[in-house]
Length: 364
Ligand SMILES: CC(C)=CCC/C(C)=C/CC/C(C)=C/CC/C(C)=C/[C@@H]1[C@@H](COP(=O)(O)OP(=O)(O)O)[C@]1(C)CC/C=C(\C)CC/C=C(\C)CCC=C(C)C
Image (cartoon, rainbow, N blue to C red; front, top):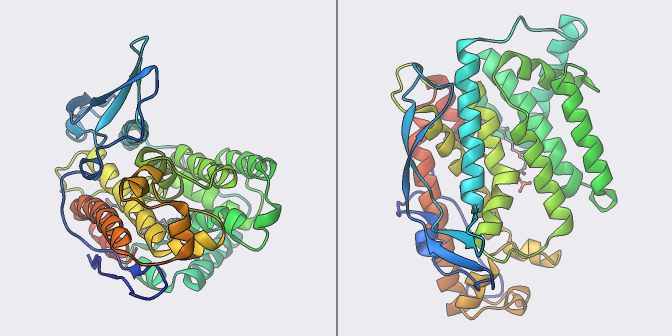
């Protein structure tokens, strides 16, 4: 995996940029254990736990009892004694559900593929997805050529849906996008999952989700991430940022694994592979955030955890000024360590994938 996290901090005006890479550290939050403030009714508890979790539906397929390391360092307990889940725990629950679903569908596969319209139209739709993919992400596209034709087409269809979703809030029409428009996009997503695609690109994805055990949840969650982007421009702490990163990028990993497939010889649990996929998405998004600090600031957005900025004595004004100071360097070093740690987590999962699917991940 060419995951080198080199960072160059210019001594001039810009805040620096980086490439991603691998270096292992114990866990993202171990680096950042402080929470901004304790709510009146909340008690924060250290939560470095390892759970043994039974995943329903996974019996007899892969190891069903898996050791789950909850990456969150803290869980909140309200005065009523209810445990408030951290974002990492919430997301991990999605991972467990996904993994159980994949295992269930592997045991009882869906019926024959329903081809919407005629076959040549469907082929055309997939080809168009490939073209779009090649246009937006050349290296990644070349990597997909190493996959089996069926898998490659499916990944293209997923890529195109993700790209279109991202364009809604990041593309030329972004200023006109409202929560209602996102609701309509979500309704359209549900339609395609129910075999009623709106256009040819949706038809390719409809065919993909029929062939592979892909669940709608990560797709819906990505749209939720776009909603979050519309209403939020600051993240109080890493917990909030983690959820955002899951929505917009961790979801990509969860969508892709059912298509890429786990190697038949792999002894890893399905959950651990999904966890690695999640880590790759989140690591990529954190890297993008660190790379784009200046660009985001120009749009009035700061995706960095506010409590961690404050701990280094940095304010929004420092970010907007774009000056590289020792405080900034210290802050960035910690953020980079966290991203590296997640890349390291992801790396472990790549070798568990079907052999032909490994290379494209290295180009992510
Ligand atoms: C086989 C394979 C590699 C599949 C993934 C392909 C895929 C479906 C990509 C979709 C990417 C996309 C368009 C997402 C929309 C939201 C978005 C823009 C997220 C950011 C991507 C960075 O893209 P880029 O820098 O080009 O974006 P901008 O120019 O800044 O708009 C993200 C950072 C998310 C990317 C997420 C991944 C690369 C995660 C991929 C994880 C896997 C494929 C799982 C691998 C499995 C294991 C076990 C490790």
